[in-house]
Length: 110
Image 1 (cartoon, rainbow, N blue to C red):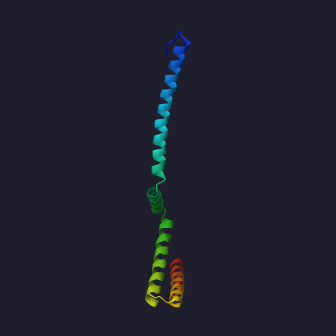
Image 2: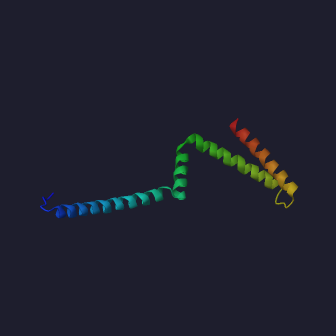
Image 3: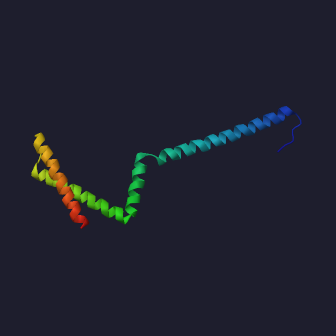
């Protein structure tokens, strides 16, 4: 660094140095904020979650079993009750779906 003879010159040089440092830190902060924003986007969160599920064979197998049992439960409800506006038929359909889902899930674990 230069040697300054007047205190005012030293003060001006320090001021410029601090302004440059502040500008550099501001740019770094903006970049970090953009990276953080990108990291927490819902699409990226779901993508990371799904990719981590793909890596775990136990989770992948249990998810497959869950989807199959819930899907078959829903299908059985649709076959037994169909589309209905009746409150009693709708409740009966949910009961059939629950029972079918539990039965299929139990058979898959055995």
